[in-house]
Image 1 (cartoon, helix red, strand yellow):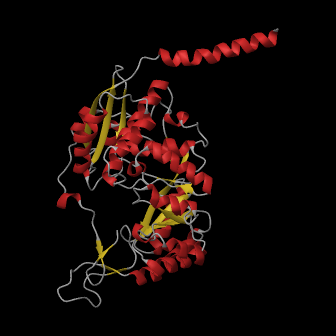
Image 2 (tube, one colour):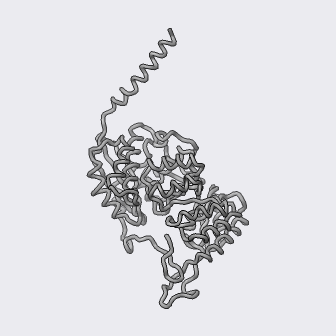
Length: 430
């Protein structure tokens, strides 16, 4: 008798659940706002604010693109906004798929930024309405905090070694080491060497010199700092073909956490050759915008870390799927931040990171004090770990009045990415 009553009570509970869901008033998207700001620094941030029919309920997403900023703004205002108003913000997956296909041509960087802004804002709304942080909706925490890697460098191995030891003293275990300027190493000084007549008077990149210099400097760094820190290095796609394979082979003795983007995205097939000659871990994907770029690399286990940017691949929805694919194939995520990235994208990555068994490492990003005032809830990095705040949704807001006080500053040549050149004057990728 008691068992039968318990069964009846359990059945009543199940029947009551849809009623509770049905009791929530339906939501619609009432307005979409594009917010731009320099953040009180030199950023070119673009945020999307989706307002709903429920008073006070809105979501914020990132459409960060430092190099095609105006194209993203126009796409959001002229193409996404008119299409999005009136739709149900709770249908995240359907809206993502529909927005992905509504442009007909898809998987480009600008459209992915647009998708990202919409997707993050929708997850923010869903979390706020549920009264939960987004990571709870993604399955809950699987780690206490998100470990990050630090960025250090020096003009030579001695300076870089000192910077690594300083980073370790501040609490970091994972540390990226660069030499000279960002992407440095392998440069022949301006005016030095055999150059064409009338050549540019700038430093010239030489692949073979890079392959010769950088592994030797890492040997000196590792000898001074010991085996404890987990070191990584960003080649920034500067090498090609057999030079990339030889570089990775020479880096193997130094027990790298990973080398990043040793090849440009146009030469991904060479990762098969790299796997045949060494076990140096590979982090790949900062420039990826199409899943067919990273899917074969993961499925064939040719890389060790997927380095996509959450706002570059379309937001939380595809990032969670990527993290699950990494988990299945024994690869890890290492979502990319970059110095120009924003706090909303950082928190979007955090929510996927902290809820995913496929997580590996997160790139750190610090912001000036003006940003913490403008965007309350911005995540913090303490002793090598990234912490959110546990608030519903993404856990971040934006003071629109304060953001408006920091308009974009003029940029040279439309904000083009600065390019390196070889000795003969040709452009070096990326």
